[in-house]
Length: 455
Image 1 (tube, rainbow, N blue to C red):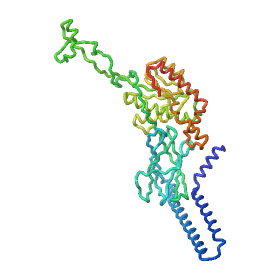
Image 2: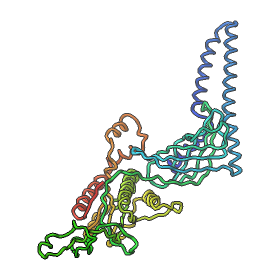
Image 3: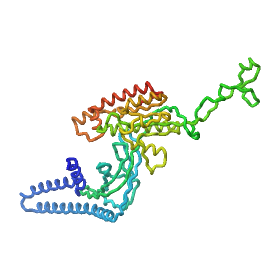
Image 4: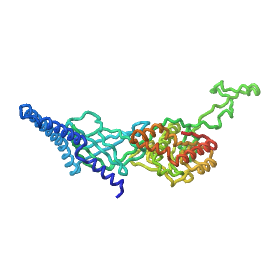
């Protein structure tokens, strides 16, 4: 058994202790107080004063015991009722998510509903979720949506859960904690659940120019675009009674004494559509670099979603082609499916650009700092009439790293894993290689592509 698994099991046992540190602290204070009173009365001669002191000690002790018993009963009753409901298979848990836009951290608003369950009188219900590969959330309380009855068999509300990555999370277990008003006792029950949700990318408010559309094979796919056709200023016709006199070409009349009008320009809807190719190919190898698997990947997904929304708003006939397409049968809206596909994608080393791109349909090419520069050069040399979106992943690392590093080194242990990963990024051996590759990609794209947007 590894040291990591031993630590995990010890932490699991600590999470399920029936008492809290507050009860231990309270017991220590009681013992110290009793010792002080005992020293005050042990050397005193028997008198009414000492009898009153001893009586007060007994009354206080009895009162404290009553408080402890009531606290224990207040959590024991709902605990037993919930345990019976679990044994009978009547426990129902429902989790749903709602994205919260936040630039500093990835917050996920989790809507929570649990039944049947009874909250301890004047006490608390707290929860802990187990997700993915033995990952644990902090112990949390949910915020009620509205004021509920004192004795209710349902618990519903929401919780803002800070999650590190934009991806799909699988919640497989939940621990319910029944705690009294003083938080002396914490009785826990673990319930298996099977819930999943995905964190959504957010919009960076980028300004992406619409790309050049490619002609489509289907005539029913059309984009309104001005094109040169017969009837523009290139052709003329004889003046008729219903023609606008302002379009008469007087130069021709002065020369030939013939009234001729110029036909107006027209909009012709041409059959065209836009193909946006997205590559998550990793040519450098960042599998062991945690910050690139979290913050770097998050930044790239935010860029892709922002660019897609911007172009889609201008040209609805936009097709997103990805190197790892996935589907979710629960989603019916096209935008939701695209958002989900971007959210659950990861860096990969199996599908390079050459296996993904169709040169005849290529309109928009989305690449990152990890893309292979040789493949990008081959694609652009074969088709330069392309809009390239280059996501510089180093832009997603820019924060007050010096302050974080000094705080972590001299003042306290860094508890924020995201900041700790940023500090590790500054000392990573692959950092220089990534920066060098993205600089070379930027120069190449600006030299060979029709349009380049660097984000």
